[in-house]
Length: 327
Image (cartoon, rainbow, N blue to C red; front, side):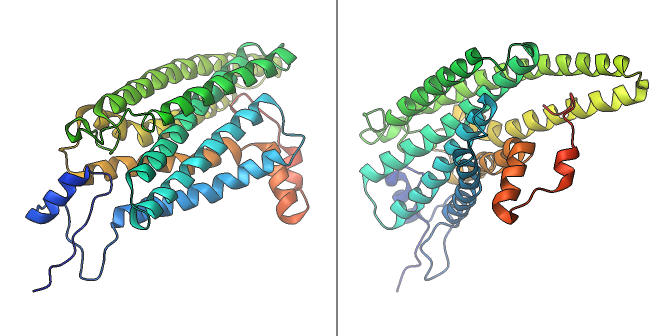
C-alpha cells in the first residue's frame, strides 16, 4: 500500500518532525494524497509577498522624493525597509524549505528574518522616541542636531539587528544539539529567550514614552483650546482623538507581537508546531499594518503617492491642518 504523505513542519527540529510523521502523531496534520506543502508555510509566504509589495512602495516613495529627508521620514523608511526584508525572508524561507533544503539555507533565512523583525521593532521604538522628542523639544526639534541624532540612532539600530541576525550563522544554533532548540529551529532556547526579553523591555519603554506623549498632547490641546476660545467639548474631542490614536498604535503592536513573544519564553522544541505558526502569523501581520499606520497616514507621503499614481494631488490634502491629535 502507498502511504499518504504527511506534513513536514519546517519550523520543527527535523528529527522530531520525522518521528512524529512516522508515528502518525496528531500534532502533525496529515495532508491529502498528492499534497506536500505545509499550508501554514503557504500562508506565511503569502503574508511575506504582501509585506514585500506594500513596504516596497513606501521605500521607493521615500528614496525617490528629495523632499522626504526629515528625521521622521528616515525612520519611516527604516521601518519600511526592515519590513520589506522580513517579507523577503518569509518568501525565501518557503522557497528554500521546499526547493533547496540544506542547513546553510535555514541558517541564512532564519538569520535574515530575525534581523529584519529586530530592525522593524527597533524602528518602531525609534519612531516613538522621535515623536516624543518632536513634542517635548518642539522649538529645537528641526535643528541639525536632531538629524545627526537620527542617523546615529539608525546606525545603532541596524548594527544591533545585523549582529542578532548573524548569531545563528556564527554558531549560536541548535543544529548539533536538538535538545537546545527553541520553537523555531535552528534558534536555541536561550537565543529566543534573549529576543523575547528584549522585546518586552522595548515594549515597556514604548509604553512609557506613549504615556508621556499623551500627557503632552492633552496639554497642547488644552492650550490651543484656551487660545482660540474653543468650547470644552472641542478640547475633549481633540484630546480623545489623540489618545485613541496612540492606543490603537500601541494596542496593534502588542496584539501582533505579544502572543509569539510570551510563547517563545515558555515553550521549546517539544511543543506542537501548530502553536508556533498560530502565534508567529500575527507577528507578520504587524509588518502589513505598519505602512498603513506610519506611512500612508502621513500627509506628505500621501501627496507623493498621489503624484506617482495619477500625477495630481487632491485639494483636500492641502486643506488639512495638523492638530495635536496627529501623533
